Structure formats: structure tokens, C-alpha cells
Amino acid sequence: MSAAPPASIAALRGVRLASGAVVDIALDGDEVLAVVPAGTPLPDTDGITLDLSGYLVTAAGAEPHAHLDKSQSWDAIQPPFGDLERAIESWHAYAVALDEEDTLRRARSTALRMLASGITAVRTHVDLLRGNDVLTGVRAMVRLRDELAGLMDVELVALGGPTIADDVFEAALDAGVDLVGGAPHLADDPIADLERLIALARRRDVGLDLHTDESLAGFDTLAAYAAAVTGWHRPRTAGHCVRLSMMAEAELDTLADGIRTADIGIVALPITNLYLQGWGLDRAVPRGIAPIGRLKVAGVRVAAGADNVRDPFNPVGRCDHLETASLLVSAGHLAPGDAMDAVTVGARDVMGLPLAGPVAGARADLVAVKAASLGDAVAFASADRVVIHRGRLVSRTTVSTEIAASVSTRSAAPATAP
Figure 1 (cartoon, helix red, strand yellow):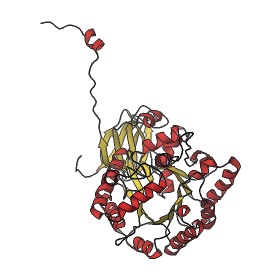
Figure 2: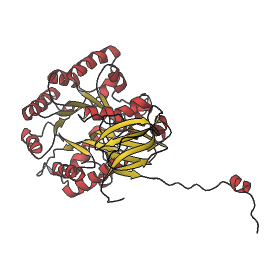
Figure 3: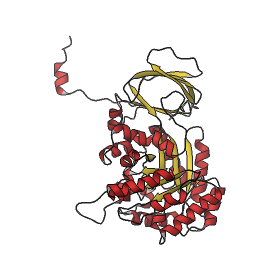
């Protein structure tokens, strides 16, 4: 790992687009200036030129739903394998004595893994805690955001349950948190908690990002959420939404109309939802992922993220948007192009970030992956990557592989003279 400062990029040469075209790209500061057929003269701009022959370039990854404060806590907690309820219990027991420095260390490690994979924007939920120091995680995440300024964009969401008082949310917002979050479907009175969170966000004039309808047959809060925020001017997002995967077509169409009218972005979270569901059954185990393919056809803004990484809610995870894209293909039945859109331009849209990608006029947040095609990139997820944030090189990973020669290869080699 190098400690060199980010270098400004003037041009990318010989890179392949998702369409298959091989192009050269000129950057001017944090903006893509031109995308032209490879070998075409480019306008002069300041910075270095990278030859990326053999690489595919897309918009940089964006993670619209993370829990960096929880990440990489599995080994310390040693939680039981299990469903959402057991994961929540394990985390709450551990978080009573949460340490700020340890939280920052774990979160930093996860965020830098994300950056190396090509993720240059992260929205992370941070728990408002029980106990004597309710803002331990908040302080750690604000520090992390400050540390990583210039390398990646970090948004913070205050995540509190129905027992967390409004003044704790207010204190988190005063400390630098950006949005109000929660999981009203888990409350004893889901609609009352939903209305409280919406009222709090309106009072502070900030956006909302709620965990919503996180089980296959749980309480319906998404329709009420949509009705309550229609016409509002602040960003609003709903994560998980797995109950929608069990809805009949006509019922989902009606709900999708309301979501579209309310302009709520829907975030699917395949890896964590696949892990948490179905523990009570030993055969025909059900699974559910928010049906973002169907929602996108209905005009809803959609995205996907990885959610938890090596914590009680998910013991695995590679901090890689291409892992999420691959799961959307195999478990969500999306085409690779749609899956890639969900973890790049779609995620940025739901997060309220400027359009990015290899398009003239777009923000120069790009990731180049060593791959012959978009399908290869999603399938093989090569670690050979070049990551550009706002026109500057922020990460580059180069992999070297050596494979021993086979017996048949060696026997076919010509003999050498003594």
C-alpha cells in the first residue's frame, strides 16, 4: 500500500466500454471531458495519462447501504449463526461497551477495501446506541468521513429504534450525521415509529433512509412511507424491501406506482438478506430480494448494495460492488448490465450524487477492471483495478499470478544442448 497523494489524471488510453467499443477518455479536473475512438487526438489537460489496454471502464461503484460501524466485528462477537432477531441481540449485547477507536479502525479497514474494489461513495448507517455513550459510533464515523475526504464520499445515516429518543437523533444530526434512519417495521407500532422518524426528518430538513419491510411476510410500512413523503423535497430511500418479492404482480404494480410518485429510491441488499432468511426451515427454504428489476421497469429509482460485512448480520462479504452485481444476476435474475447499473449509476442516483461514468460531462468517478467484456467483469471480478475519484487516481491494484507448467508442457519443450 502506498502513501502517495492522489494523482490527477489527464487521459485514459485504450480502455473498453460496456458497449464493447475501445476508446480514449480525456479528463479535465473532476469531469469527463471527452470520450473518443481509441487513437483519436484528445484535448490537452493537466495530469498523467494511463494506458489501460485490456481494461473495461464503468462508473465507479457506490455502496448505498453499509454498516461500517458494525463491520468486521464477527470475530470479536462470535455470534451464533441465525436470523435477524439473533443478529440484533448479538450486536446489542456487544455494542453496550463499544469502543470508539476500535470502531474507527474496523470501519476504516472496510472502507479502504471498498475503495480498492472501485467504490468511491458510501452511505453508511450508524447505530444510536443504548447505554451511557449513545454517540460512540457517530463520533467514529464522522472521524472516518473526515479522514477519507478526497478519497471517497461518505454519507452518514442515524439508525435508531423506537426506544431511541428524539433528542438522541437530534444530537447525532448536530454531530454531523446527514440523514435520519430507522427500521419502523420492527417496532411494536410500526406506523407510529414511521411517522415519528418522518416528522423528525422534516423538522430538521434532512433526508430519510429507512430499513423497510425486511421480512417475507412482515408488516407493510412502505406504502405508508410513500404516502407520507410524496411531494417532499429531501432525498428518501428504502432499503431491504424483501416483502415485495412475495407480492402478486397487480399488488406490486400498485405499490410501485406509489413509490414512483413519492420518488423513493429502493435499495436491494442480496447478500445479507440471503443469509438472514429461512433459518427456521429445513427444506424448501424461502429467500427474498427486493425485485428491483420489476420496479425499474415501473419507473422506480433502484440500486443495490452489500449491507453488512463480517458482522452478526452477515459473516462474509468482500467489500466489492461486483460481488453484489453477481448476486443480482444469479439470485435476482437481472442481466449483467442492469446489475452493474444498480451498483454504479443507480446507486449514485439514489444517494443523490452527480452522474458519473465514461460519458462527456459526467463526474470523473471511474473504475477500470481488467476484463474483456462487461460479462467477464461481473463473472470473474478481477482484482486488477484502477480507481479514479473526481479525476484523481486514488487506488490501483495489480495482481501477479504464476502457474506451474504441466507435465505435458514440460515434455513437449525442446531439449537443450549439454
